[in-house]
Image: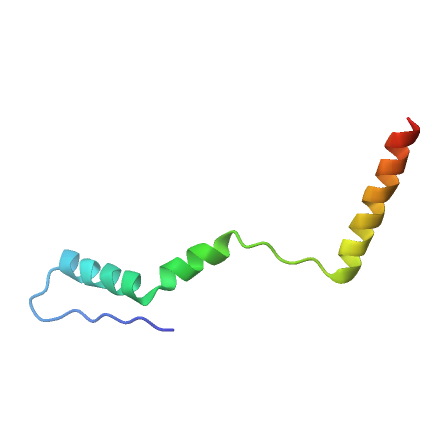
Length: 65
């Protein structure tokens, strides 16, 4: 999605920035990007299995000690 704001005649730069920021907020782009920032990738099935097996091994080890 492309967001474009063109400077109008006799418009000062602060007004242009204000219009741009309003458009950004209304479009929801910033909200989506911030949401994706800390999203964790899901592990593959094989990686989940390996982790579960490792946890089981560690439980047995701790039980022996």
